[in-house]
Length: 150
Image 1: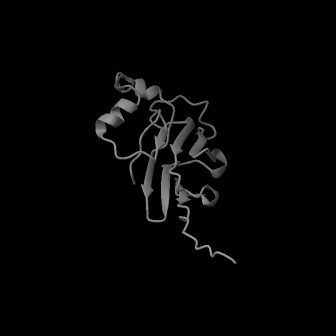
Image 2: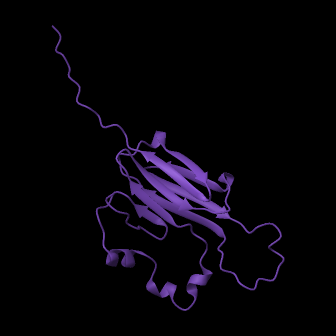
Image 3: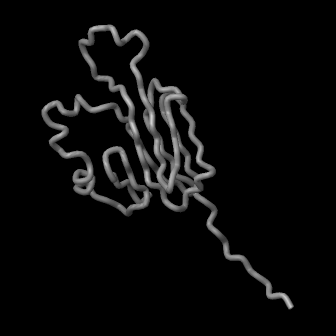
């Protein structure tokens, strides 16, 4: 794959060529956001991997505890958007929390797709807390011989 380029927080670009670590740092949230416990206030956002294979691209996201009804996937103008919301389990709202490392809340991830993706053939599945989105590459148009009639 040519590489993922964050556009804004939670947005990526599969069209861009390779990028280096400095580019990643400059395009992510300010480094100050990760200091002094500010990170603890962040809403939950699932980890994501994207790979390119010979015939398709595959995006996988960690969505443990979420059901398919909690996830919305759209493609519009070459951008794949995944939205969802991970809520607390029933009965957890009226308890006193002593340790709170798990994250909850709404999230949005957006990925600009290469033009070679066949948007009509995209599929998505969930298994064992992993959302897998398969984006087949479109068939390249082959040259067609046109005969000249009399």
